[in-house]
Amino acid sequence: MESSLNAARRARELDEVRTVVVDVLVVGLGVTGAGAALDAASRGLSVAAVDAHDLAFGTSRWSSKLVHGGLRYLASGQVGVAWESAVERGVLLRRTAPHLVAAHPYLLPLTSDVGPGEAATVMTGYRLGDALRAAAGTPRSLLPGPSRLTAARALALAPSLRPHGLRGALLSWDGRVVDDARLVVAIARTAAAHGARVLTRCRALALAGDGARVRDELTGVEFDIRARAVVNATGVWAGGLVPSVALRPSRGTHLVLRPGALGALRAGLHVPIPGERARFALVLPQADGRIYVGLTDEPLDGAVPDVPEAPESDVAFLLEVLGGVLDRPLGRDQVAGAFAGLRPLVDSPGGAGGAGRVGGATADLSRRHAVLRSPDGVVTVVGGKLTTYRRMAEDAVDTACPNAPASRTARLPLAGAGPVRPGLPRRLVLRYGAEAGAVLDLMRREPELAEPVAAGITLADLVWAVRHEGALDAGDLLDRRTRIGLVAEDRAAALPAAEAALYRT
Image 1 (cartoon, one colour):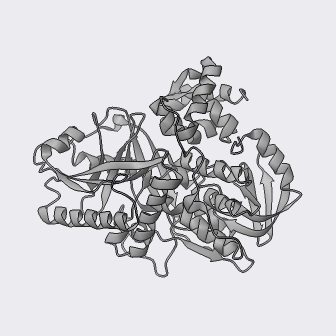
Image 2 (cartoon, helix red, strand yellow):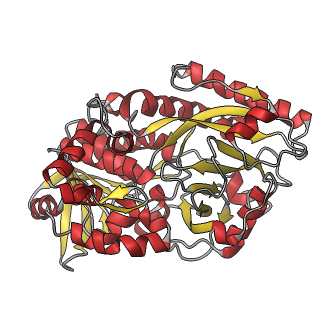
Image 3 (cartoon, one colour):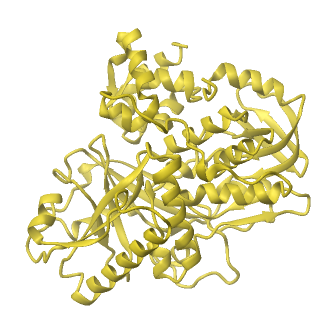
């Protein structure tokens, strides 16, 4: 496959980039960096894209998995950000990633904490969001409109809700991505299919407008990559390479609940945050039975870690918020794991006042992205969110290469998009889309690969990731190509299989 990423391709292209001058060097292979690599390569530009770690190693794998229409931003007066979100959500749902992004229902339980006036206000917001959907051209068949449900219907969808005092629920729909890290992999592979050299474990040590000094983290060898334009898409780490970039990172924590913790949950939940106006915790059931609960919004002080940790204070806070709507509050033992991500929020002069867990300074900062050019010509793209990655990438490449052809990515399907062979297992279709048949064929050729590993993942998934998705070690396999690693005991159980998969090339 032209889109296949693997160790052999990496070695070959690592040799190539030492001897050529590329049109664009992209530093950072989260969703925005991968998007910039695809945007530039699909315009016919020669591209090298590097990351110190792996695809989606940083913020892009720690999102809320939402592909949303910007209702929150509309409520705070950020109309432009809301419109951009609605448009980009439609692009993903309709054209570029329908195999990875789909509509999902969410319930807002009408408890004593949500008075009639607040319920009416929220429903008005949902209807405004639905108007944005229509204006953006996303059909109702892909994203249904909001409605009000009876208490009985709400309990049928979320049986763990407290029935006493429940007046019903508001039902809304929004987009969600099956797996944010898999979205990044699909973008990177599509970039590779258009000729981009996608190089993980390649750390940029210093940037300039005409290239970068980099180090191969597998061998320690340092060399230069020469480029006509350089895009810094390293997110919360952007200031480390371009000191003039000012960011105010925030930490968002999610819990991973054990399967069955909330019964047969058939919809997501929006749970009001006590004392906060129009802010909600999110409960999102996963295909493997796990449930994500998030998220906090805490300012991050000090050095930016490679992998942030979720503090116990965040865990306790989210359990307390969730317990406010449940018939039986959850104990700490129902939390199988937790993860935290860092948002690269653009700093604003003077900042915002009033720190708070969800309603504080970083929660109030705009999610609008910024494209900045440093005096030596390096273009840095920061801010934004998962939903609008494509537009961020387009803007960055427009700025870095103003004479390049126009962007094509709004209509460019990602790897795995396209017709699906009939009769394939649903699990494979949800993970691989049009490539599900190829994964099933791999199992049929090598029947031992059908052996289950953990969390619904088989050995075939791991081998496919090594051969086609650029996985270079067990961490890539367990923590990003799959999400087995979110639960420590699952990770430990699956580690031998992951290590074995690395040798089945």
